[in-house]
Image (cartoon, rainbow, N blue to C red; front, side, top):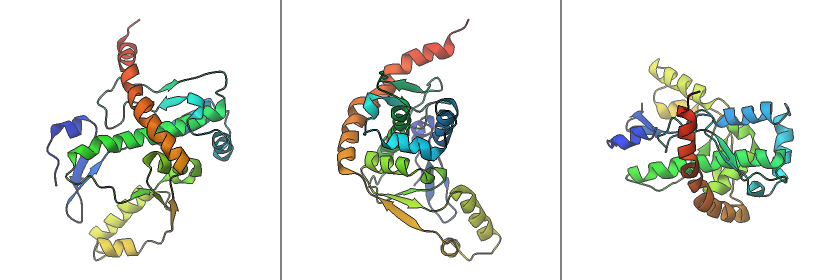
Length: 233
């Protein structure tokens, strides 16, 4: 059904009519892959993604107490704040590049969960039957493991890198009469699915860290970010 509460739009979520009937609602991170690329270029000294992943995987969940708020461009859906900025907190001398990289990935996972948690109260059915991961982020196994544990829900990773482009092509084929219906279009695509299960110990830690730290992170820096955004020389 259509969500008529204007607060849904103000929080950054978009909705529309789906081609097969019904409606969809959309809300995602504006700078998920861009955060990783920014880190690789500016902190990772140009290391390849595999090398960064090895460094991050060597660090325990929690990243030695470092947390990352992934608002490099603006706040993501769930928030309503164009002044928000990205933030690392909890830095110590022990926090080297691997800890910072893992903190960044954990921040992306926490943020995605927050975006979902904020949306669910507006829906009539809040059950989560399955979570599917597509796109470039699926090439990062460490990120997929972290997300599954932060969600505390199995993550189905689909072997389609450019899922958005593929979906657009399928809909174009449907409109042009190449496919009889959406089901036929889906059946024409060949792909594999890998199931990533939550890691129990990590999931237990992330559940506490999400509630006690991450959900308090944005409110704790909101005012100073607004001052930074409005400060004039």
